[in-house]
Image (cartoon, rainbow over all chains, first blue to last red):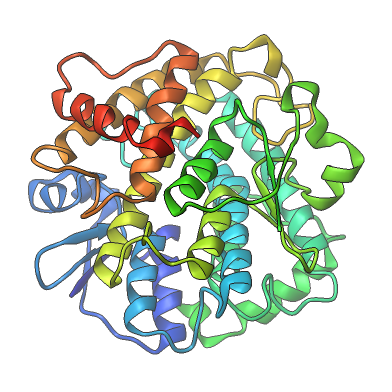
Length: 209
Length: 209
């Protein structure tokens, strides 16, 4: 298999951290989003979502969506488990992945996509053009992100990780906190649980991925 | 366990169709979103996302997020499989769930939440207030939804279902097509593959859920 990656972007970083936690190495090809290579014919034919990461299997199947890629790898390489170990813990991991994506990752993406000159006329991920920026989404994204950080801080009271053990929920939240710096946002200084958690997960070797 | 449901809403319908496909019956309590019961103390304490569906386990754990609920049930009741059967098919189901959520479900929700009087000042799911509507999201949502329908139509060329077998990806897309009627949208008449697929999945007994 082959992973299509773009080193600076947050979504492929989720997969890279996941791979590092599993101690897996996959042949990787960079798709330079800054040069809009995701819209060029070879890659665009493989992944009509025009997104990275994408995972090309040996039979030619291309899997887009970070979580679909990680779940594919989880089925093949279950140890250490990063999506939970039983029905309850799997559900809790999935719940928090989605809470953090919806209220964190999407909020930062909205802030960036609707303000940066680079994304003028393609304010949605995967859009080649024709999607005008909506400046009001910057303010809405900032408020949503702040609430997400507060909720994570409450969740992390007395907890080492978001779920019972380190999981893809932590990977997702780590990527969100770091991605938020792109739009000059960081957790409020009083969110001590979140700060301590961030220090813990950022110290893992996988966080350098 | 107990399922918190709201009969008219699209997200709990995903879980209800899933339950019908599994031939599972779970004690259910209605949370009347029209009366804003999701913000009242009993439920709000259980699910601080203020969303339905939510699944309360016998140990008191509350799982929010439709897909987290379905994955919990999938781990307990694997037959018939609705999230795929092996690494590849599981990844394809997850990929399409997310493509349809991001480009379909979220688009219709944006259109509704940013136009309906009922959602003035709470234009995001789970917001109790303070989130002003952004009318430009109605137009953006409409364009995104149209592209989603076109993409589904291409995917369904020569296919009975979105993935290799009937799955949660089909459930999600069915709910999106039906939910779109709330904002007076339907697939363009030339999307014959999507129309034939919709007729097929809407004819399943589970679609009445």
